[in-house]
Amino acid sequence: MFRCILIFYLLINVILFIKFDQFEYQAQYEDVKMLSKLPNKIYETKFIQSLNNFTIKKPKEKSWNKKLLPDLTQARFINYGTSLNFTLSEKKNYCVKTNKLVKISSMHQNYFELSSYYRKYYGSNRGLPQNNCFTNLEQTKIFVNFDVLNKNNFLKINDKYIDIKFNDTITVNPMNLFYTFIFIIFMFNYLLIFKNNKK
Amino acid sequence: MIKIFENKQILLAVLAAILLRLLIIFLFLGHGDLDNGSGFVENLNSQQDPLGMPYPIFSHIFPYYFADLFKFLNFNFSQGLRILTLASEVLLVISIHRLKIIKLKYLIYFIALNPFLILYTGLQGQIDLWAIAFTLLAISEANKNRILRAAFLFSLACLIKPMVIISIFFFFNKNIKDNFNFLIIFSLTFIFPFLLTFNFYIILKNIFIIFSYMTASKNETHIAWFLTDFTNTYSLILIIFSIFFLKLYIKKTSDQFILILPIVLLMKGGLSSQYFSWLIPLLIFNYKLGIISSFIFSMNYILSYFLPFFKTGSLVNSNAFALNNNLIGNNMVLIPFDDVSFNILYQIFSNISLFLILANIIYFIYRGQKKNV
Image (cartoon, rainbow over all chains, first blue to last red; front, side):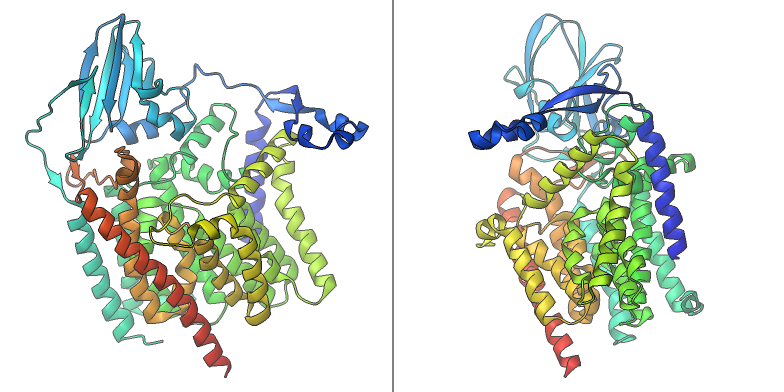
């Protein structure tokens, strides 16, 4: 078993080496701001000054034209439940308020942005500005995903409340499924561990 | 170990447990670690800058990169990650079995039928159990005086989840030569993956990220834990004190490690989500109390899925226990509580969980002392 783990460790390192070898790096001066907090006498020494401007190799900057939000994550947030589609006319200011995901995309869907709230999840530049307010330069599509039923679920575009009525929806109460699961598992535990195998 | 499966009852229970986990994985959407994992793998594959990750690069190859390889079997990343979590449960069984403390039959039943572990693997898929299992394997090797192997396995655990590094002190003994050998192998194994990047920037950034994660406290904590402010501020000092006392008063290395996990959990206020998995070794050794506690913890775990919605008002799928599934249809999920009921329920369960953790720690120490007498 130990040998298997050792081989596994080496395999991971090989993958790591191959994957990280693909990056192009560029030399940059790193200004270590922490050092400036040192007392003057120490800060001005030759050693600290040499540390203050040392060269590092950084990976080249991200090319933002590539898709940064993975397909899977998009599917995870957009393709479930019901998504409402609207077309927004061009050259107009919009503010969208909702507690669900908003996706704004060009008509051909080759460019998109998500609710500003989602920006912090991915460190992505695909997030809308704060409060989801933006100026629409071209005709765009807006998707608002509603897959959770709650009285607090709402949609307001430019402070105009949009009433949403759902027909023919199957509603699932997750707690009922959970209680059933807990009951079945408890019975198994009772029969197989508590009764048969005291220790 | 494989002989145990000649017992049909065990074989059936294990098969049923695997089937149940697979059903949850493939029918329900669950959480997964999509934010960190899939973004990293996609960036890596498209030759984008992969930095900004919260764990060492090693743990992003294992298991995150391997989860992506499941696409060749037509499974998506999220499903792959959770199938790997299922494998970590198997490794946990092997590692605890190697300690030769409890009966294998009970151990298999416990892991297979534990409600929290079923939900943890099925709905979430995380890396915590890998680190715990590798540490326990390292302890079993250290018990056999195989210091070099123990150092290597412990280093693997730290590469996967740096938080377990706090238990390094439990591996040291009075033999200076053994300690020296342990440290040399541990350091070499730990540093090697970083060196392979041939980039000082990546190494520095990873060290900074690891350190900031170790010293930062978790946000989501139990509501009525009145000492939270104190424990969060001084968590590092309190953890060091706990290590000192455990080393002084608890004899077995495995017991020391089993006890430090819940202590760290309480000090850092991470009583939610996947952090309940840190309690699993403790619960296994506490038999009936451990099993009953697992049910309470799984209730608390499910409630913690709804917590972000009631805290922030944002209905983020991954946090809102999205049960959109292939069985009933990608349709609508109810939030089954109003604000007041949720707060009362969460308060009750999080506080019961807190006292159950303390009860489990006390019971574990009491049982250990009783055995020694």
